[in-house]
Length: 275
Length: 229
Image 1 (cartoon, rainbow over the protein chains, first blue to last red):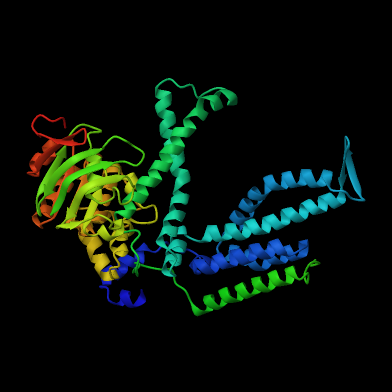
Image 2: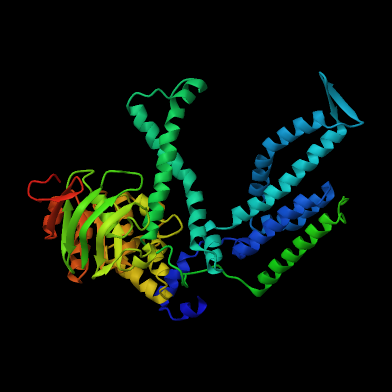
């Protein structure tokens, strides 16, 4: 790609440079694969390591610096909290009242709320929060397009790129299609106002056409791509690709080695009592 | 030259023939306008002529579809890209969803053909210029109007420089100015020797392109005079 860029005229090179998604912060400028590796390593570490202190250190060492550098601290914390909240409520209710323990905090009817149950629920929630924060940091500072192009540059099939694009596009497409169907049905007198039950009974029968329409859309799109040589084997010369450096490659390998060591240590019981 | 010799086609899971013993020839540089009622077989004929049926969507085909005398039978669809292109009526379904700009969207075909970057850039610039939409190059493909999207879809195919082009109601979503741009682009394509098969309700467009009319109804070629548009 770099060699090919040297063959381009100045206006063409400038044009291609403008195709690259903006990277407003230092963290955005890191290679998408590096950020993906960091997010995966943090997630696996958060899953495998024990106590509050370790989780706090993971967050402070592997999530917070990126969030600060990417200027997304509030977004990461808020979104991770929102994602974790429903699970926290569910896990809290189940664990606090059903987990046996010696220290009873209070009683609700026949159920005892135990300190051990509360501790277990809090640990689960902290684990989930750190995992969610790591993934949200990746999502908040990485252009999906840059990630897909980077994977493609590394030899991942363009079909995967299409699959990711189709998945990302499916939800808005379904919402748009649902809006169209709903408006069309309203114009024919469908009552979509009133109570929740009334709205649900009015709208649910429309789900079938909406989903079928969305599937048809994906099928038509894949057909159009086939006609543009999508499945053709052989080398492809991309217009641009995110920058990558030797340092980042080394960081990725280090993270990979650390994750493997962690998994081995967890499997052999060496870190089962991390604080 | 694009030829269909006694082609019959049935969609997978259907008993009824969608095309019934169709004979059709589109010579190099010729524009053939395919007219007929809805559900008459126009879109199916487009899919068959472009090698997508049965190549990509299945079904059963008898007879022969030939590009420059070479049969399409058994050839994978991606092998045909660059030889025959197809533009559909609905621009939204032709958008890849994986490109951030119009320039990248149009570049997908040339990239898939394995062209070097400078060739791809030249082709994309040429295709956008041919349709007068260079100013859309850095726009997001999902933020365009229906007419602009259709022009981008057409540019995406033109960038592959196919010798045969199949268009299924290409101006259905265009305003008069967009329609004129497409009309000019198709006329100039025909002058370069490209064979054009255009399924279109708009007979005025076909007439202004000097297209030879072929009518299809019930999956069969019928006399063009008096056939429903």
